[in-house]
Length: 229
Image 1 (cartoon, rainbow, N blue to C red):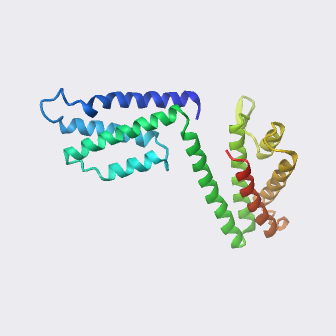
Image 2 (cartoon, helix red, strand yellow; image 1 turned 120 degrees about the horizontal axis):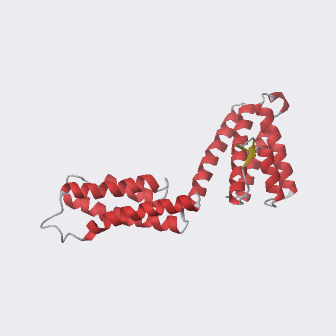
Image 3 (spheres, rainbow, N blue to C red; image 1 turned 135 degrees about the vertical axis):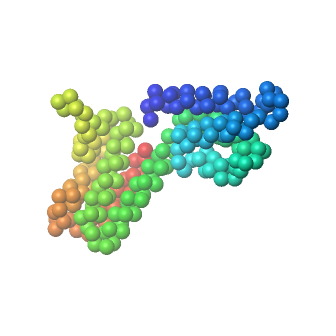
């Protein structure tokens, strides 16, 4: 996520916190309990902010789901309690964006996604769908090469006739070698894996073996763990 985008999110969270902050503890401007519709207004703002800007699988997300699931919107004390807790969660989300703590969460989410695809490739191979298995694990490999380039500030696109186009996996591999993200031996191995992927994608399944794809799956998994993003 770019700096400008992060700053924009922080500004929006600040606006929500300012709007809801007056209500959280200050009931002095009301003769009695604040109107029910205003409580629901504040509650809704906080829930919307969390839904829009809290990454899935984060601790803030899980806590918010727990609080919301236990809130009875027909009981005033339940709504008030939820507002105070959700306000704290939004404050935590803002702090996390301010200090780039969510970058680690994104890495975990990416790892989960890659692992799902790796398991898919393993299943396809176990069912002797050798070509499709090579394509799926190739998708994982190319995706990781792109993430490595992003991490090391290497362009993943190039300009042609005024149009921005994505670089091929082979070019990403070459750029990562040039920037010494990994050495020549790793680059040659990536080239070999991409060759297997290309043969699978082009239907040249008679040119790849089950053993080759099995080794590729194992190798790509190890490669991802060695060169994490």
